[in-house]
Every structure is written in C-alpha cells, then in structure tokens.
Amino acid sequence: MDVPTLCLAALARGPASGYDIRKAFEDGPFAHFHEASFGSIYPALRRLAESGAVTVTAETQDGRPDRRIHALTDAGRRRLRQALLAAPKPDQLRSDALVILFFAHLIPAETAVAVLDGYLAHHRRLLSQLDCDELGAECETPGQRFVHGFGVAVYEAAVRYLENQRDAFVDQLADDEAKIA
Amino acid sequence: MDVPTLCLAALARGPASGYDIRKAFEDGPFAHFHEASFGSIYPALRRLAESGAVTVTAETQDGRPDRRIHALTDAGRRRLRQALLAAPKPDQLRSDALVILFFAHLIPAETAVAVLDGYLAHHRRLLSQLDCDELGAECETPGQRFVHGFGVAVYEAAVRYLENQRDAFVDQLADDEAKIA
DNA sequence: CCTGAATATGCTGGACCGACATATGTCGCC
DNA sequence: GGCGACATATGTCGGTCCAGCATATTCAGG
Image (cartoon, rainbow over all chains, first blue to last red; front, side, top):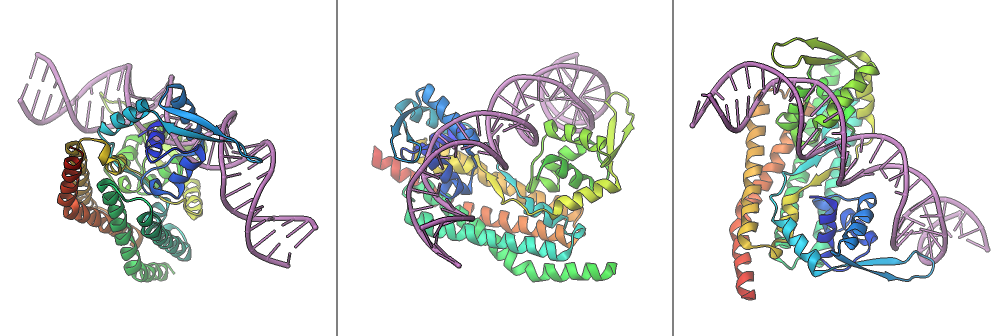
C-alpha cells in the first residue's frame, strides 16, 4: 500500500493538512497498522492535487505557515475505493526489540532485561492508547470496530505473555551466565 | 535495524550464502520479526566483506552460479554485538489487510469477507510454521525460546479473535448494506 | 516435451524514511 | 523575565531499501 493511497485513506475521514495526516500515523488510529513520514506525505499530496484527486485550500494563520487543507474529490474517492479492491500484501512486522531478544545470549543480561521491560512498557502504552483514544472517538463502522478489537486482542496477548514469562526469562539468563563463569 | 546488521545476525547462526539469508527472512525464523530483500542483502554482504566483517568462500557448482558462502569474522561478531546494544526502535507494522478492513464500508461486503478469510488463513499458516519448523530446529538459547513463545502467543490471539468475530462482522456488513438499500 | 518452481547472483528505477532547515507560539520552570 | 523544550507547519535532500527484471540451469509434474 503506497503513501498516496494511505493519504487518500486518511482524508476519507475528513479534510486535513499534511501535518494532520502525519499525526494520524504517529498517534492516531492509523499508527497501529501502517507508517508514513513527512518525506513521502508532502510530495504525495502535491501529486494527488495535480492529478485532481484532492483539492487544496490555504488557511492563513499569523506566525505559523499557512495550513494547506486537503479534501477528497469524487475522483479521489473513486481512486481510493479502487485501491482498496486490490489484493492485500502480507503483513510486515519490523521489530528491533525481538531481534535483540533473539540474540540475548550475545549481550549482557541486564541489557536484555532492559530491552524486555521497555518492550512491555511499549505494549502497555499502545493498549491504553487504543482503549481510551479511539473508543471515545470514532468506531462507527463495523470495519473500524473490528480492527480496533483485533488490535486490543493482539496487544493484550502480547502484554500477558511478556508479564508471565519475564521472570522465568531473567532466571534463565542468570543461569546461562553462571554456567559460563 | 539496517540490512548489514541483519545479515550479520543471520550469519551468527552459521555460514550462509546471500540466498540462504534471504530464505531465513522469507520462511525461516527471521520471517516473523524483520524483512530484507535481495536488492539490499547482496550489496550489504559485499560491503561487509570489504570492511572485513565477513569472509567469502566461493563454492563451485555445475550449472548454477557459485554459492558464495559468507562467514563471520571476529570483527563481524564484535560489530553485531555492538549493534545489538543500541536502543531498539519501536516496532513497525504494515498491514494492507487491516487498512482494507478499516474501510470495509467503502467496498462490496463479499470483497471485505474475502480479505478477512485470507487474513485468517495467513495467520493460521504463520502459526503452523512456528509450531513445526522452528520447534524442531533451533530453540536452544533462552532468547530464542522466548521470542518463539511470543510469536505463538500473539498469533494464537489473532487467530482466536478472527475466528470468534468473523460471523458477527459478516452480519453487521449485511445489515449495513440492507440499510443503504 | 513443456511449464513452472527452485537454486543462485546481481542490477536498476523508483519509493520511501530520517534528519535537517525554517519560522513562530506557548507553556512550564527557575 | 527569560530560557529551554515542545508543538505547529511545510518542505528538501541524501541515502537506504524494495520490487521486478535478467541470467542460467536442474528437477518434478502434467
């Protein structure tokens, strides 16, 4: 799923600036299942405007740069619907933390434990984000409720596993270090 | 975590060709938590060899191109350990399927259901891969066992949610279409 | 016998990210 | 009151990375 399509998707929820779209991928509902950065959002919006998929309205502000509000046109909506019809590529996960944990035997035990604790904290944060942020906001369509519930189910399982296995893992690390010494 | 580091990590499990490393990211143990493609693996291995982090031994084969077997040097092992010490970046998930499901109200119900069923099948496949493939193979260190268990826990939760909620989701989609009509 | 998959390396065009540049407002803190 | 940190907002740029293609051969299945 390329960035132009993702921008169209973000705009389907209402008109927004490039900055707003970025935020949707950082904190908002999109954060949990896709990524996009400024470096690709702004060029994508420009091309989308050129091709007539979105309209741009400059909103003057004093001090700050103008907010350039983008809104979907009918052509844009059609293009989004078309893109949504394509067969989805398989999910991609990129987790530095799991790589590090996989090779925990190559680093000091305390470092590995720190990574694990950070990973647990991260997942707890994600879970609370889903619980408050979005539940109050927008879960109107069946699709949105379904995806929201999926996120909660997966994060809860992750937190549970991390909590339950943490101490056993730390013990095993300590045993291994004792064996070497 | 950049591709050179990921190559070093793959080689920590034993000498391998570029093709072998690719397979480790496609089917092997690494598939579940990171990605890397030919287009970045081969250049990375070349640079790694130039900087002395790996050695290369050509293994002649008739018919096929030579297998170029790469093995970690001490410098390479040090470099890997160093990279593993860096603070991990937060996990990144990219899921086309969840984007499509989020906007299920914009596409035909049958298409959405097909995506959902495909997503469920995909997760079942991943789970069985973890269950047989790796459990028999290499789960020697605490880290490897821990990461393996984490994967199983998360995939199981995903499959369970998808199975339990599928029918209710399909019904809601049908209700919505009835409302429009 | 032919098609497709697997083995194996490598290139290239284009997409994409991370970091930076720019300019100002605001809020807490000492 | 002033200072740093952070938020708002757009945009560029270097470099990384991926998907798809090219190449060449073997082997299994139809």
